Length: 403
Image 1: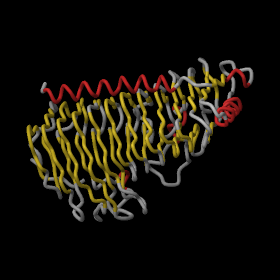
Image 2: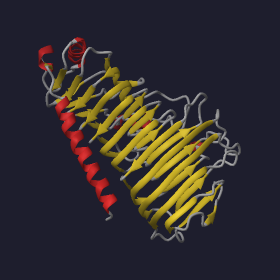
Image 3: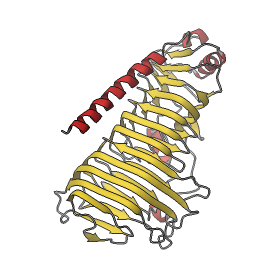
Image 4: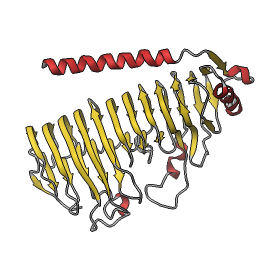
């Protein structure tokens, strides 16, 4: 290993150790609001009202505060924790919060308009989504019953979420909207492989979001970045099963904002339908851009589509593939990606014929396929990739086959 790489690795480890220390230090509050202060809090009871009252006291406190939820399983109908608050708050979850099995609507637990929030502990947010998975058909039908997202973070700044688990969400596990400087560290997300629309972490219209040292196993994208995602850093994430780590889909709606400054680094993707991908809709509702995106040092294990740019993304034939995408993709790097494929087409760079991709760099790719459906290959259209280092398979070695 070169001196530069060694130094980078040491710096990364020190950064993550510092992050652990910093988060633990932030959890030392001046005032503690134990949940037992707000009623007869015993496992199995509904603590919705007690949580609301504890949040009200913590949010209005002029000193840094902590809400402490003890071990055990508790029921919560819905939790909306709003700011702005007077001081930093540490929401410490030691037990399991359980959603109603029949809950519908947009959300279950929501944090919004809060600065300096720490959500920590070894606790679990249990969405109880297994019973609702048969009703989750929004990926097939526009007029579908709305199921709640387990955890919403709306307009959160300078905050961190650490060591929590999201289990069996009915819809997205975590949705991030309008946030700035928010970190997810050592987060665990779990749902069945066949649970639809259960994206692990979805980010939209947010800046400086980091996801580090986390494990995500779900039925949809492990991480998905919607429009307006800027300066996103995804490091040391293990993804699978699921649909991989995705930018997009983009271009379905009007007034979408640009995506720029995304780094996916040192991740492992296992038994997923996709590895790392950028996806945009054909027949886009409006023009848009996605630029400066890097996918570096990634291990693929039995992944069906390890490297993918798909500007003809059209699930369930809900669009017209004959009309090209209006999303301009540029400055993309796929570098040092290695491992195994579940299908012979390891790389697909399918760009818009209306706006071909620019400055797509592909270097040091080493992927293998040991199946019976032909030799490993790659497909390209409307792109001239800049190639360097090892090429296995050879880049753009086969003609693109239109679905």
